Structures are given as structure tokens and as C-alpha cells.
Length: 213
Image 1: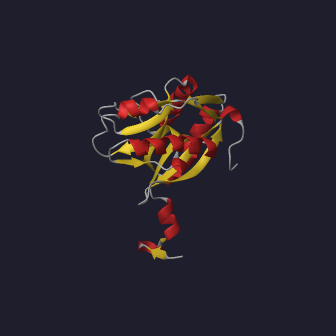
Image 2: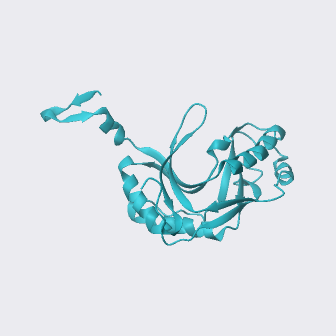
Image 3: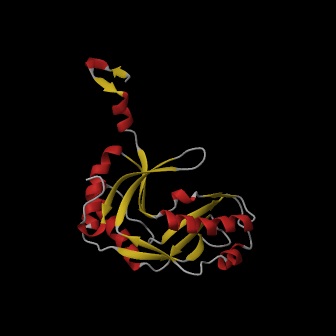
């Protein structure tokens, strides 16, 4: 391993330098493979119908974001895990029903296509509680209430004027039920062919032991 020698004889390894580099991270709820594939089939049909330039998310990367953190100090993950534990131990597992197809910020100005659960009160409770636990760590409170959703695509140009009709026709017959019993801190690394996600830690709801303990 390469070693750098600084003034006064201080020695820092490359591993140490990498450790303190900021990382891009977010808290999320992961989906099982069957749900990802089923949602991916809907996205693939839409992709063949809409006429607009968009970046479609790979189904392996589907997840429900609870809180995006942005660039963080890698060493802060210990504090983040403690904050997540303090929230999750007080909450019971719950379920979400992903059924609505929609667009942010609106159909005529769409920049993001999603499938989600516009009700999901337990999800909003999790998001709000996590928001409060993160404030002492320097994270500002979110300005909008969280919406439980999976991002399907990011639109790069003017949206298809038929988008609302196509999304309405593509609504699933039955909702995709997502059991929620854990919260994951995910690292996101940008790559030429899309983001690469790596779980950093997982905390279970209801006080059960976390993965990696």
C-alpha cells in the first residue's frame, strides 16, 4: 500500500485518505426482487409507449427513499446509525401499497416518473421521526412531507403530451405490497451506466437486532 510522508514525519496511508472522502448517501426502504421485477415490467411498457428523452432507472436500483442526505463525511455513519436506531426502536413494522403512477412536479412539467403510495401514514411517520433525529447532526428539516414512491425515470427534455393518459392506462390492477421492517443507509456512486448502490448499514424496526451486528 502506498504511503505518503508529511511534514514532521506524519504518515498517512491511501486507505486513510479514502476513508475521509465524502460519500453520497440516503436512507431508504429496499424492495424484494419479485417486486422490483414486477414494477420494472410496468416501466418497460411505458418506456416503449412514451415519446420523450428520459433516463430509466434499472430495476435492481428500485427503492423507496426515506431521506436523501447528499454528500456526508464517511465517519458520520456511526452517528447516523445511532440516530436510525433511536427512531426504529420506537416504530412497529408496517406495509405500503405502491399503486399510483405519477410525475413530479406535474404532468405538463414532468421531470420524474414514479409509482407510489400517496397515503402511507406509517411511512410519513417514519420519515418525520428520522427527520427529527437528524437535526442534531446538522441536517435541516425537509420542507415537504415525504411521499412514498419508487423513481422509474428522470425526464431529460419536454415530456410526452400524452403522459397523463399513458400513466393512467398503465396503473397496476393490484397494488404492490411492500412490507417495511428495516431502514437502510445506502451509498450511491455515480457510474457511466447508472448509479451503483451499496448498503452501509440496516436497522430493523421494532428494536430487533440490525444486520451486521
